[in-house]
Length: 216
Image (cartoon, rainbow, N blue to C red; front, side, top):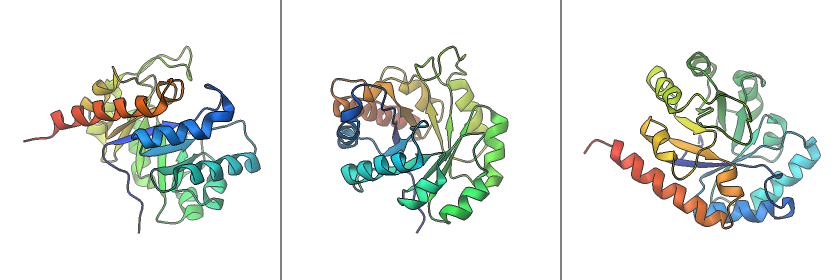
């Protein structure tokens, strides 16, 4: 059976350099308890064995309370096994990742334009991560495209879209109102004194914004 993203979907993207690295797994588990639906393990500087070890510890900590996808490393996603992989625009093609992961796993594609989003559809991606919404620590100096890009993507293709980039509980409503199925957050959760409370606040705001968009 194919894995399906929750709707709405709160995604936590990991960065062990935010806060105390030794508490990353614990903070992710707290965030999942607070409402995170999808964890994207994104640690580009780790070697395969190190990444697999961290993925195993995350899986043990969150169990089946949230989905776990691996950024770029399709081999690690298959070895765990994870629930899928998140591919950047310069990563291996979606069809190749699909051959490795099989038909049931999730494959997300990160896009930064309408053209990139349209290309992901025939390739067979399951969902899009669209950025950058707002100025963010992880992309310093990059001019954010804003929620208007996400609105254009949603109008242009049928894949569910998750917004990413500098999103906070104060700004996530703008992203949801642009048509997003969810938001992806790094610092807004991992740098919070209470990751679980931060995730809960984001999730509540997302749900409220989504309800406003649902026809009565």
